[in-house]
Amino acid sequence: MYSEKVMDHFTNPRNVGEMPEANGIGVEGNPVCGDVMKIYIKVNEDKIVDAKFQTFGCGAAIAVSSMVTEMVKGMTLDEASKITKASLAEALDGLPPQKMHCSNLGADALHKAIADYKNKQQK
Ligand code: FES
Image (cartoon, rainbow, N blue to C red):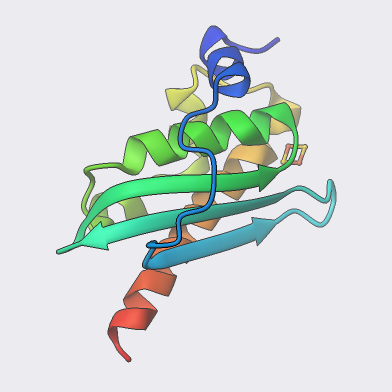
């Protein structure tokens, strides 16, 4: 069913919690299952130096949040923008087909956080 990586990130999620010093925040919800994911990023000179998440959702959504926040640390905004639901699922050694939408949530919340950061820079 679930890969070891999914189980690991679900039972021992990394980067959980709020980040008051975040300069980009993205929230994405899935109206079908009702799950909501919030991703915080701290960007310094075009690089993501820290990331955290708060997710009210299923186990796969929690594993995806944990993985995406781990992956983006140290990436440039351009590199992080290229993360997709497929690359997230792949990083977790796959997700069951009916759980692919959970990885979509992770990619979308991240992209929104990046857009939020860029938006704030223009003000
Ligand atoms: Fe909705 Fe996983 S069941 S995010």
